[in-house]
Picture 1: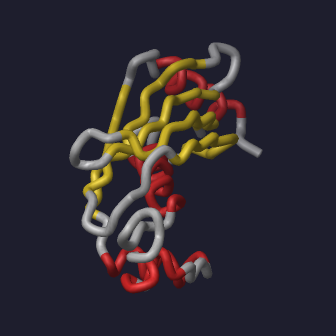
Picture 2: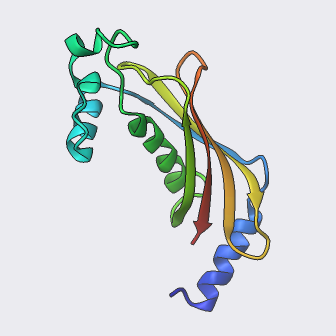
Length: 145
């Protein structure tokens, strides 16, 4: 349990966040990243790992795990905005378009609400590819510690 001074500091930090504050990170999705994610998650679906199989699907080629793209949102939240000490309370996700091998994915978060009574922040979350196409959209609610 956090002591009173830590809770006060968290609340003050959260209150310094403003609606419209934004941060992002970008990462190229490589074969190594997809294979490492498959090992970590246990998701060995051939649509992610087997070019021959993937060529027979509606996508015509390999796609990255949707959660690999979505994990970039967690990276922004934990390292940029709100940053260190942020704790996920919830996250919604809509997977709108696939992430392809070689795509550069930019995950962006934007503050949409700051609770004045608690150190809780709501953020719009979006992942786009290098062409500006929206791949993933959702909303995160985080506790700022």
